[in-house]
Image (cartoon, rainbow, N blue to C red; front, side, top):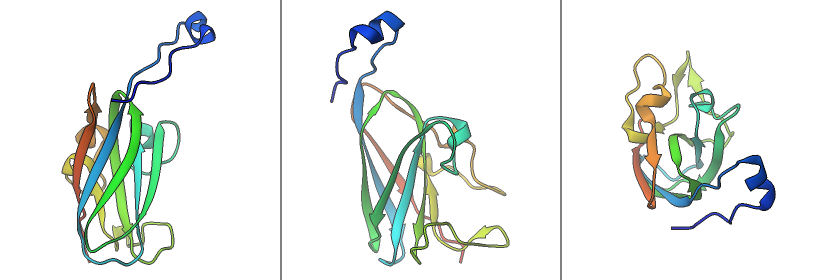
Length: 144
């Protein structure tokens, strides 16, 4: 467990509490090749999920792809509720390629949230980071 730094006098005066932080590690399974990179987003609000835009974006990670499995380390994050979205950017252009709104590259969500006519809701993919290090396992899915 990594504890956040003690609250300053200014924080105490504002009534702000400092939350403990815990490491968040993710295993990504099912990558079909080692081309490109895996782009992941950790979101703490429904507004930021799954597109990783707006308030509530906690972290972005980009790691080199590897056939089979890659590990993501989001490092210490404050206790709270989060959801992860990711995609396998095989061509390295920095975006999820689609054809007629259907992903042409692999994608995945925390808790292996189901995709039905669009991405899952935050509630379906969300998980808690509590009083200990957290670990998630995601499976990458490919349509094409």
